[in-house]
Image (cartoon, rainbow over all chains, first blue to last red; front, side):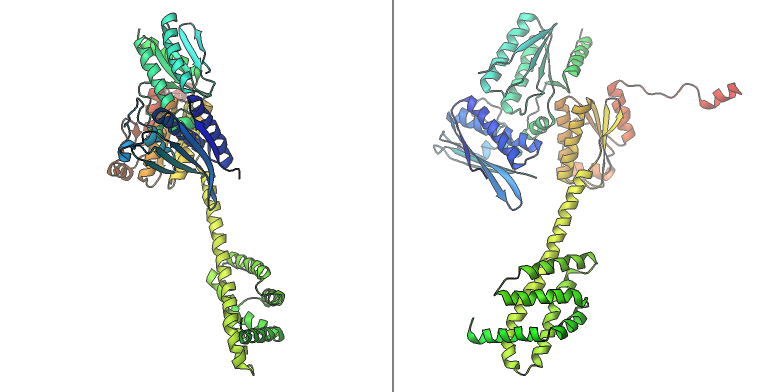
Length: 133
Length: 121
Length: 279
């Protein structure tokens, strides 16, 4: 299996690059069209979050395996200000920027596994996984 | 950055998005459209997203913003050609595109605009 | 392995080799199986003992075949395992009548463990085969799912039948939405008359489909909601909001006709009167 792939996000063009790369890996893993669209959308939200709230970050894309299923794992990391209240951040409509506040909470609904690690001044790491059905 | 062209057909403006939208392109399109509606006195705007593979919250918000903006400029907006996978994802994401009219394809979008116009003299 | 245990083991092996015919005959009786089948197994067992310590690949292959063929013939997996265990009984009897009983007894533990392993292996094969059948059927069920039927020009319907799980509902719904694109139909009816029950997840999927159809520019009505299902949906607290629901498919079709501006009426003159005029 081709190993890990990485995109460094410094501009909105990189968000597009993330989408394209995630799409190609999702096809490779065998996700259905709807699931491809979901994970690409989640990747777009998370990558943009890193860009908007932390000025940039990086996205790592991995192919994972669990018994007979394959999946795609995304790790989005930034060194931004971090999120003070994780629970609040996962509520629909909560935002500190001028977004809709659907980035984190919405992405969580689009994936099978969602893990958020953050704290004030510690940056933010979001790990999500989508399994092939 | 790539710009999305705005086409004019009678008093209807047609935008067909054929590229992977970058955030800047999205913002530029918003401005271009508002200008074009005023310049041409357009009464209707059709945004064709048949070729768009994903609509995230940013692009979704652009669609809602354009619809709202055009309404203020006395033009109706119809979004046409949304793919099933995109629609399912938007619902899951929690985005409703409130106030944006939609049609299955360009032809039905034009018919919908005609229908709206005949209903509101 | 200690020298003593090794001797004991060899003693058993020798026992197996010298009494081949007698053992197979007796084993076939206990296991209620054909002696041809068993002698093949028996020879594979002897061969594996010959070749080395633990090369059981051949005999495992044979056992897998045996397990499968017996499962197909309607034997319970425990029967197959018991048939294999039957060999222990035969060898124990034989060892008892052996002159060097004490020596052979030590090897019986080793032999017993070997046969236990093989017996359990048939059980494992059986469950693996079952698992595969279940997976295949689940997949077939998904493929079989439900057709999207055209009701009228611009109106399509999906009659859902049977218990809906989350995966099946998703497949059906994706198919419905794709049909809207392919046919340009602006009206859809999801009929759940044939669905005995819905849970929260399925209700949510139905709901999301209607909203997704709307996003695409089509209208979707849910029909055939039985009283129990209506009760469940309300009790579960699933909010159907402004989604149109109808009790029967006929009501849904009538509603859709109105929305689509289609008028359907009875022919003005009754058939009987025309006949009377002709006569």
